[in-house]
Length: 376
Image (cartoon, rainbow, N blue to C red; front, side, top):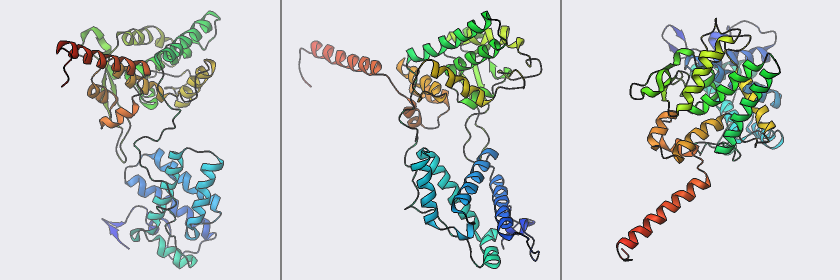
């Protein structure tokens, strides 16, 4: 067996099973050791714990569906499972592809000679794992974004309706003397701030009070000229990617100033929490709370199901482009490495396209008149 510095590699069978020791339930114990070894190997690669847990969950789910252990898996078992996920359970294309990717990665791990699992299985069971994921039974990731077509940006009218409804819920709850009005105010402000800076759900949830600062080139925004995002979307195997997002709309300052200066101090946990959005019982709002609130408002307004929290980010990109902001500036604001990704997020309205066409046609007509109708 190959060894790294000082002993076996992370995830090797020698670290999780002792040679010469009889196993009471060999099938279950070897499978559990495989999962533990793969977990260690992935963590050694700096993959996020949440990513590792999702992959382990996919492997366990496939094992249950196949009703057998990895050294007995066959490609047709994967075919049946993926077909069930897509055709019966209705999972999205990207989810099914991610599940298949997890199974393929697990099989590659088991087959790598450095970890010794194939030899261990051959010795213990007279069989060894094989790769069950191939180009003919798994989907290929061919597009930058695989979101369903129903996912889109809010129109300006829809966005205004969402913000107005959120504010109305605060006013009604406060007038009725209900305790939850502060949480409603917090969530209404959170939605506006997420849109104001084009933030993802986790990015906005993880903001602290200290994450805002001045922009020396835009003094009119005061203490809220820049938002420092510390938990940006990470590249595979790396830490969260930080970025700074500049404030572009004056109303954002008013919203933040009112929340931080007047309302946030009234939250029960505000004194102990550094979070911008403290919860009523813990230090920070949860992602599930954000999801539930937006879903409830969307249902009440009879908005399409395709308008999710990420639609606020799509709207930010779309509305800036429609208002004539430089595409490179927008790309840097949302933290996209490639302009093509920002272009995918841009869902310009028909009004914008009509205005663009009208501007181009008017320019052609003016040029024709100035040149006496001569064609180039």
